[in-house]
Structures are given as C-alpha cells and as structure tokens.
Image (cartoon, rainbow, N blue to C red):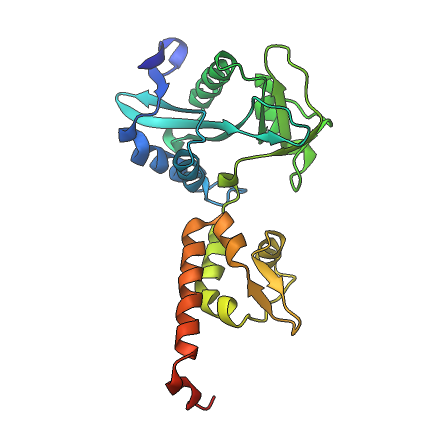
Length: 265
C-alpha cells in the first residue's frame, strides 16, 4: 500500500513512498550499491547491512521511493540498544538514492516519512551516523548524553520524538552494521587458511589489520603471529565464519593424515 504520493510542482518529481515488497529486494540492493559507489567514507557494505537486517527481522521500517514504477530510493530503520536500558529508540540508515535522482529531495521525503512512521509505532527517538549539516534540517543534533563508541561525537546525531527526553548512555546499533569492509573481506579471503590453522605475521600498524584486531577477529599469539577467531569472524560475517570453520576442520583432517607425517617440510 502506498504511503503517499508527492506532486511534481516546482520541479519536483512525482513519486510514491511505500513499504518494501519482496519483489523490491534486488532493486533495493542495486540502489544501495549505486548510491555509495563513489562515497568517500563508505565501506561499501550498505547492501549487506540491509540484507542482514531483513534476515534478522530487524527492519522496523523499510521504505522505497518509486518514480515511474522504478525503485530509485530506499531507507531503513532498525532498533538500537542503549546502555541505560531505554527502549523504543531506532537507528536510521542506510538511506540510498540512485545517483541520477540525487539532489531532488527524494532522501528528504524518505527520512520525513520514516520518522512519521516511527512516531506512529510509539518510537521515542532516532539515532544516526551522518553529515551534521544535512541532518540538522530534520531536527537531529549532537547530544553529549548519548555516545556511540568508536564514532566521532560530531557525526553521531540523535532526535527525540514527541517531546521524549534524551537517554544517557552508549548506543549500540544492530549487529548487521558490524560488517567487514571490502578490504577486510579481501584480507580474510586471501589468508583464511593460514590464519585459522597456524596464524600469520602481519603489520599491526596497517589500518585494515588494526580494524580486524579491534573487532577481535585477529588475536595476537605468543610467537608474534596473529590467529583468527572463528566466533568473532562469524559475528561480523556469517558466511566467512562458516568458511573459516570448514577450512579449519579440513586443515585439521589433512594434518592428521598419516601421509603428512612422511612429508618433510
């Protein structure tokens, strides 16, 4: 069911904002990929975040913008947890608009409609990580009472709804947001057997390696090698977690083979 139709006066597009349907899933992923392809600060995991939120049943609201029966925009809202126990707060994002349709107020329409839906759900507030100068217009602000560990406070913004107070504590987004970046995925793919079975020596000053260490995926061993934590990897990427488990079992099986004892390394 369509939520609203925006008329085209003053150069605006006529578009429909509605809830996603199963037939939109592919188009939503394509919009997310295209929207963030040239984004300087994107890790290009937005389509995976949306997919994992959907799989976890954590898409509180998933709206699409449609122009001429074509999905050209999407926005996701999902629950967040707050360390003080406050409930009914949500995270905004990702929000995506096809590049050729950007700067035509599609993102604005999606955000405003999504916030209205949160209010209807009884939502008490919304949080996001984004460009302050853009989100200030929607009433999002920095608030020292709420923080997100690892995120600069100036780009972590919150908006209480319906006059609700702002909680005090640390905000945690859904696990779907803890995606590995493309670079991290490449590193894991290239060395997954060595890391899982024997560990490898790496440059701990490399930013991508530091990120994997911070996420607990790489654990320093006593011999200056780094081992891979299958459980931590699985938490951030279910597919690679299963792959690591399989590879570890396979390597273990091979090393138990009597023939291996006859091979001199």
